[in-house]
Amino acid sequence: MSEIRIEFLPDKRKVRVADGTSIAEAARQAGIAIESPCGGEGRCGKCRVKVRGAVPAATAEEIQALGDDLLGVGFRLACRCRPQGDVAVYIPPQSRLLEQSILIEGVERELVLDPAVAKRAAEPPTPSLDDQRGDLERLLHAAGRPQVRCALPLLREIGAALRAADWRVTAVVAGDDLIAVEPGDTTGSIYGIAFDVGTTTVVGYLIDLATGRQVAVGSDTNAQVAHGEDVVTRIQFASDHTMGLELLRRDVLAVMNDVITECCEAAGIDAGQIYDVTVVGNTCMHHLLLGLPPDNLAVLPYVATVTAAQHFTAAELGLAVNPAGRCYVLPNIAGFVGADTVGVILAAELDRSEELRVAIDIGTNGEVVVAGGGRIVACSTAAGPAFEGATISRGMRATSGAVDSVAVQQDVAFTTINGASVRGMCGSGLIDAVAELRRAGVVDETGRMLPPSRAAELPGEIGRRLRGEEDRPEFVLAWEHETQDGEPLTITARDVRQLQLAKGALYAGVDILLEEMGADASQVEEILLAGAFGNYVKRESAVAVGLIPALPLERIRSIGNAAGVGAKLALASNSMRARAQELAARVEYVELSRKPHFQLRFADAMILAACVPGKAEAAGR
Image 1: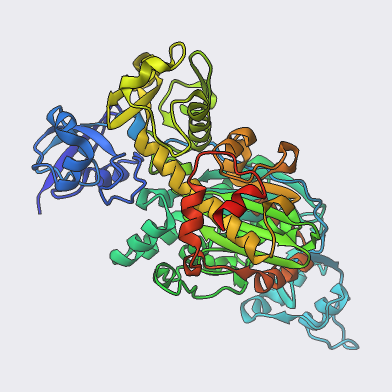
Image 2: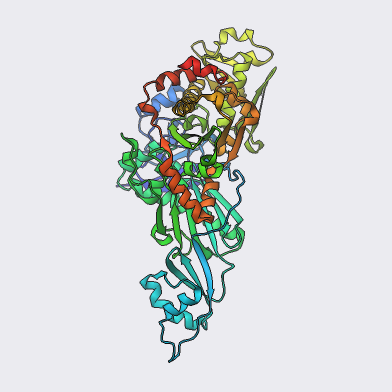
């Protein structure tokens, strides 16, 4: 097989690959990340690049995604185009995968220390003819833990370790196991790290387990996004490729280890001082991290390989902490409601609520929990991709240059993340834009956008922004001179429809869970919005488009990265781990697809209007 040379511009990076290699794969080999929400299936059209050189005819996917105009000036899809000879590839700004703004903080909860891994200083008496106890028994008795076990590899080192330290050591104990012996008194130096492994991002919290103090936080984009934006696409990648599952496992593990390094450098400690790790994530992320085949999660009845909490050594998972350290993976609830939801319940103390409370975690997937009076019910909805930009024409994740808020008065005003020039629009910007266009009369409650022929009916400069064909209108949010690529940022009628589909599924999930509880939205005391989207979206806009019930704004509260807070609580306390396991077994999972009235509720919830508690429910039933 012959080789070809690909040069990527404006990076000026060159790479040699086998002919027949896709431009997307060549970019990965060159260390360049390209947007690929669909996982390289040619559906999303967001990996467009401009190619000069020997390339084959456009594929059917490229023709559909790009059209004759873009193909005519050299644009191709990086995932579909496989050069036949040397080429130069220009990657436009909007096609690059940039570092995401990652939500780190969550609802404040005090960490009560009762860690699973502890250190005990010991000064066992030296052996004598009158004291013939073995070295291990001598150590464990001095440490006050005579009944713990010791694995053979460590047992082989005990004698030398005690004598080298002149019989002044620290025993590291995890549960009923002695896992390490350190010279001297190191009881003040014991750390753990709690991970929230999300579909899009990975966050790690380094905790001093001697004091309960958070000493560092690290985060990064989940490298698995190169193989697909959502869990279904990644499950397909794992199934369709011989090494797919292993590649996905290595990707997320590498990010976790990078976060560990980042945290250790920030705190000025050695990774060998980390003896405990906790992990939350959705069920698919759980399976991909552990290398468990995720195939069954995507087909009826959506069953996980395991839902119970799991315990491993750090070495077994390949985590770059002390090899003798332990890793606790919190339990899942069901195939599409995972340990991250358990973390949210722990952080928000939903299991201890007598009043009716609703928690909504909108990420790449949307999970809903309703709790009150001793019951907890939960479901998963296919809401996330639109809110993270995957199904929106100029949508993107919350990275630099993403429009994140919009206001429409006599003209359009917007802000972008980091104040950068416009690259696209993230979820909070989409919700704002639709809410504002609805208020301005550009979009009606059914989601229909005015045709350009009626632009004169709109006030001020707003009408000038409405353009396109009569049956395919679009509204310009940012003009050419305001964007990085010189192309206007528009919101299309199809974008509005994608938002309606996503928010309709989410609201229908809330409605059905409330019905399961024998209640409606008028009885809800509080709505908690978890995750990055829930943290940044304007409550007013979320209510205006009918994303959530129209409660008074003071009863709608953002709780940040609550899943990560749950992971920290489990890291600090054995009792929280027991509570997590009890919660996972106690939560009643509701499969929405089995509800005969789900489609009706879904259709009702697509209306772009505030859903007033008590009225919307009556109309839908």
